[in-house]
Length: 66
Image 1 (tube, helix red, strand yellow):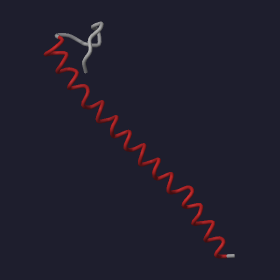
Image 2 (image 1 turned 90 degrees about the vertical axis):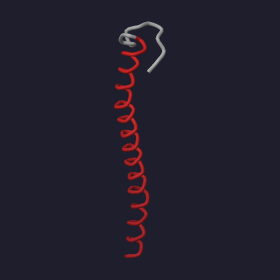
Image 3 (image 1 turned 90 degrees about the horizontal axis):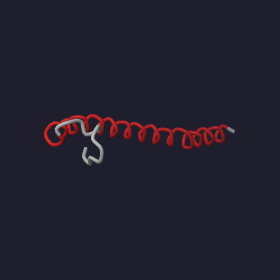
Image 4 (image 1 turned 135 degrees about the vertical axis):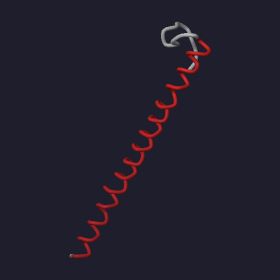
């Protein structure tokens, strides 16, 4: 009976804990990538707006760029 309890306990660990840790790691990775994208995009956009477009590229129609 105790062996069955240990088996159910280890099986529940495999079914619940391991996928949960993978989902948490995936979410943290996506969050870090999105944070990097948002932090890097702003300086690049202001540089190109200042030196290439001469104004805010979001307000200009048909402008392709960062």
